[in-house]
Structure formats: structure tokens, C-alpha cells
Image (cartoon, rainbow, N blue to C red; front, side):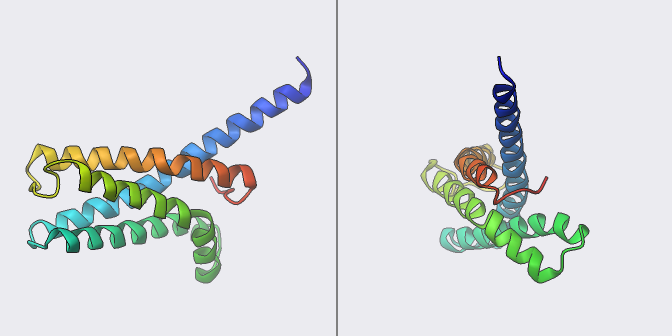
Length: 151
């Protein structure tokens, strides 16, 4: 085995790990926002359309906030941090949110369920899994192209 093969395997493994980490990071922000949106919507008796909009907006806001925190801690100003997150995480957040909403829409009983219903939480978990699976290739591509380089 030559040295270039070892180097390629290391880079691929590093890209895989970084893409996985970036997707988990995105999932935490989007997931918390989605859950917060639903937790607010259900007791407020918002209709399904309003609940989805609130959840999507909060998912994006939490996703961006989670993306900006490490940049701000690293000394980035607000504007450069926002620009970096918009470029590096915007598509990932959009893909994740889209798949989360689609799973919630097409999982029978989720939209009619209350916070105390098992199907509600089952639907949330399924939507987060689908969002992760959909967003991982986006993050992997960004890592390979050098667009996403934060840990």
C-alpha cells in the first residue's frame, strides 16, 4: 500500500467525520427549533399550517444561531459570522427543514396528535432522522469542496 492511499483514506475519513459532525450540529439547531415550534403551537391551538410555519422559522433561527455561536466565540463579528453560516449551513438547514416537514405531513396522525400522544413524538423523531439523512450529503459535499471547514 502506498503513502498516497493512506493519505486519501485519512482525508476521506476526516471528511466523513466532519460532515457527520456538521450534520449533527445542524440537527441540534433545527431539531430544537422544530420541537419548540410544535410545543408552542399545540397549546396555542394553532392550525397545522401556522404550526408548520412557526416550526420552520424557529428551526431556521435555531440552526443559524447554533451555527453562529462558535464563530462568534472565535472572534467573528456578527455580519461575517452570519455570512459564513448562510453560505456553509443555509442549504443544509433548508434541506433538513424540508425533509422534516415532509415526514411530519405524510406520517399519519402526527398533525392531529397532541404533545402527550406517542405518535406526535414518533413523528418528530422520524422527521429528525429523515432530515439528518437528507442533509448529510449536502454537508459532505460542502466539506469536500472546502466550503465548510469549522469543527
